Length: 476
Image (cartoon, rainbow, N blue to C red):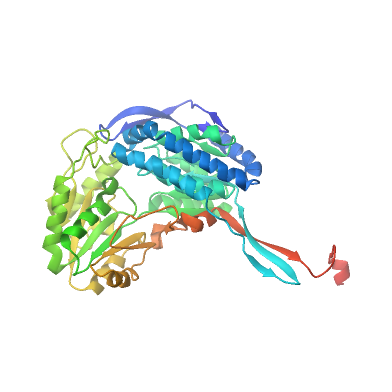
């Protein structure tokens, strides 16, 4: 772990499993309460000087980007070994972390003047919150870490980060490397299980909790933060619909939808989780999707030929198997896939499901894996209603030969991001957040930066020369 600029060992450890084998391949430190206290103390101590120099913060973020870019070849295999994704995708994740640091290093932070006259000069500024506790998931350990770290540091906060216990190693290693370019205590990393996360959210020091994970855990985070009125950003689950319109080209659309659904083996909060197809195109779209699912190379992420890796962990592997089995037992058909692969590790066949009813669990819940239900519709209004009939509201997409027509439909989706003729198009300058149970607050861009600060109005009176103090006595 990294605490106060030092590399800190632990008295106990926990195993980290390689999902391609299902076996423990490394061990990670189990943070104690005393060590967590030390991490928060170091962050609190570093805060006063870190917040005072924005130019130095920007220089530090650029230096962090350089460290990340120069570490890609070292970090990517480690990330693949603990997460499972193909090593090329892991390299892209390290690269993206650097891009996020560069973006925020160069992001302008204006302080608008809202009054400038003979009475007063009034300016609106943003001030940092203090110490931020960041809790990250296992699907994109580094990308999602830097969605939090980069804006938090630019805003003037210090950070204690806890990665998922399924994928702690790449985060711990990266934060260790970054100590070379950051003042001690500005960025700390601890690791452990769910109990550690609960300690962090209830701890008296952090003023902000930034969490990415499940809806169930997100609600617990909000409850834990409420007594102390900690600010929270919660990026939670998604059940993204894709609506194909009747003028779309089935082959072109199917290729893009397959990528939007099976990216990272379906383990993306904003991936396509259900597809609505007009009856006239249904068979053609299903056939095209089945072709892609049957042909994609699934294997160990360290094999350069692999395009999809395993599911990351045993609980999620079990969940995907249960959801697919439930769909099949309720009348669905697996056009391709439908079963776990007969090999070590957490591999599941890329699965395309037809004949799925709207209330089936794999439609109503978030599968977060390589299984995609395809459903037909008679009218666009029906498709929109079914797409919105959920507590989820993260993202969605509409596909059509007529982008304007698609945009009209997309405007009716109740979600944080509505894509037209694409899906999973994300960037550091684009706000990302969910409606309904899919989250509170946003990440990325100036909107995400503002989540790590508070508004302050600075009012300078011009009504008198020199010092003009109104006291209770003069008022009376």
